[in-house]
Image (tube, rainbow, N blue to C red; front, side, top):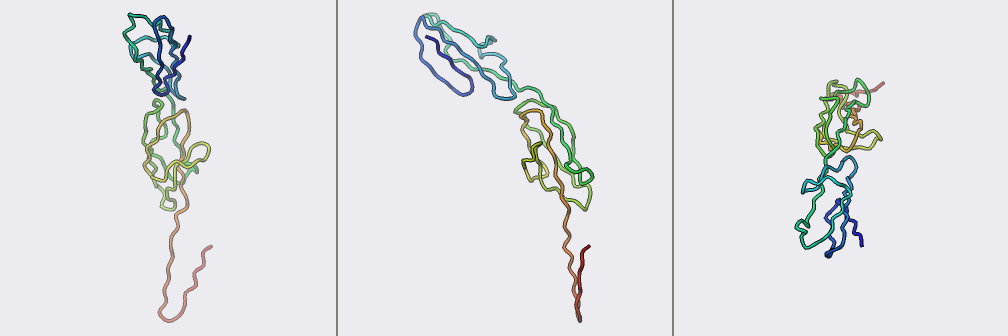
Length: 159
């Protein structure tokens, strides 16, 4: 009888002497298998259960793959970003900072390469999941124009 366990979440099985247990560690996207908690690197790994079996609790150790995150302004000339390239491992957070460098534009949001909005905060903690580009989106700043007249009217036209 073969039992197949994955290391995605805690999994348990019961085995008896003479049975073979197969452990297969399956990394999440962006990660790779390094070793088991007892330093064995075989994957999948077979263990024959016997009266001498002492280790019955196995932890799969994964490490994040290294990725490059490019950070850009969606429309050039509308603003800036603090840093344009990050390199880090999957699961690691990075801090993205948008800079309002032109008074005619204001920061609106961060979005991923597919156009999905990620955050509306100028400073944003982004978790690396894979190779990608993240965009800072700036929009036209709107100025409220107000005019008052004591004895007459004021007409405002915006062209």
